[in-house]
Structures are given as C-alpha cells and as structure tokens.
Length: 297
Image (cartoon, rainbow, N blue to C red; front, side, top):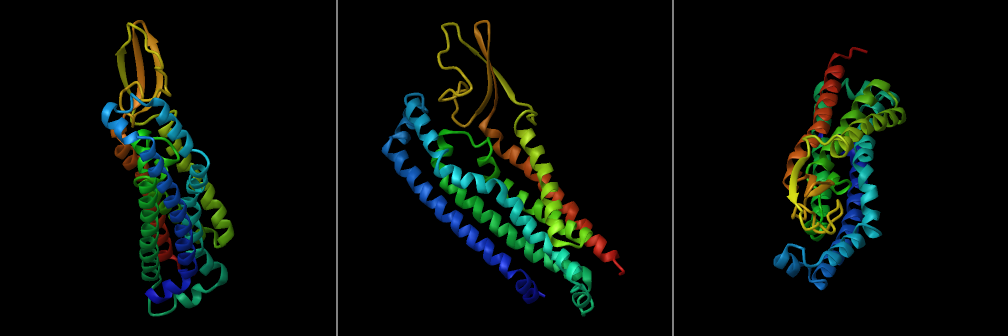
C-alpha cells in the first residue's frame, strides 16, 4: 500500500517539494537582508536600551521596507497556498478513482476499501503536516527580526507563524477529499472545495478583525500633559509593548482609552483559529471514511 500511495501521489509530492524550495530561497534571501539591516541600523541596541522608544523613526522605516516589495512577494502566495495545495492533493484522492472507474480494481483487491482509504489518508496527511511545518519554520525564521519590533497578530504573518498554515492546509485537504467522493469529478471537487475553504477563512479573518474573539483588552492611560503621537500607529505602541496590536485610541477627559490585543494572546488565538480548521479536517475526513465504508456500488 505504501508503494501504491507513493506512485499515486509522487507528482504532488515533488510539486510540494519544489514549491517549498522556492519559498525557502525567497525567505532566506529576505531574512538575511532583514538581519543585515537590523544590525546596521542598531535596532538591537535600541531595543535593549529603551524598548524602541528612542528610535521610532528607524523602526517605522525598517517595518515599512520589509512589509513591502519582497515581503509582499512572499506574503501574497502564502495567503492562498495552504488552501490550493490541500485541495489539489485532496480532491483527486477519491474523485479521480470514481471519475475514471479505477476504484473497481483498487477496491476489489485483498485490501478492503476502508483500509485503503485510511492508509491513503494517513500517509498523505503526514506528508502535508511535514510540508506545513517546514513552511512555517522557514517563514518564522525569516521574519524573526521583524517580529521583534512589530506585531504577529495581523494577517498575513499570523497565517503562517504558528499552527495556522498547517491547520488550514489540512482543512482544505479534508474538504477536497469529501468533495471528490460526493461529486466524483476532480475539477468540480476542486472548485467546490476551494469555495468551501473560503468560508472558514473568512470566519478566521473576522475573528481577528471586527469581531475580536476573545474580546480585546482595554486599558486607560493618564494623559494630563498631552500625549503626542498616541495613535493606533504609534511606535512603540501606546501600551508600551512592541508586540501589541492597538485597535483604537480614544481620548476621555485626561485619559486615553486604548483597545488592543496583547502580544501574549498570539498562541491562544492560534489554537482557537487553527482548531476551527482542524475540526473541519476531522469531520470531513471522518465523513469520507464512513461514506466509503457504507458504499455498496
């Protein structure tokens, strides 16, 4: 079975490897450039001395430089790669067998259809987890200097630092497998699965934006003598911590009411939002196994 799975999915595996190599080369080039600029601008010393308060202009310039240009070249593809890869790998797994009629041979051998599917899912899912973890590792390494002076709580970096990239990949894979089983057509399954994957992606974006779950933190800062530069884009943020994501700053008498997401919530939000995609993967793959087990014709 392992040899059969490799034969069926080797083209997808080679494509994923090639895709990872391209991303890794770009990430290494950008990451080394970041580290060189970070050192040249003396940002490490500034952070150690004042927490960034003594060099707001330098920090703003650094962030602006590396969130545009080369940074966008990496960020934009990564925003959709997890969905596309998961669906392209998942939709043909059952859809191709049913569309081309090869299931008659594959499921009439000594290996029962349920064991056939479970083995396929186990090996392919393992490969996707390795791919997702590798992309996450190389991107996290690349952005480490930028993460020291900016927030990781905004998209797109939130999508590929932590659990989100791999979880989104598995969610798309599960949707692709189930769509292929139900539609029995690979192309149609890809289209339907991608549209379906966009729904939880939109929910995650809302949870990180307008809805804010868990609710954002609120703090009040005394400001009797005036608070120059106290805005949502202040460097460093008015909360005093470079990793915080400031959502709003409102003046109330002699105080500033600051609504923000603390940097310490990064992993909490990762577990919540990645959990949504993992739940989708578990439900869709479990449903596919159950439906195939009940299939009689």
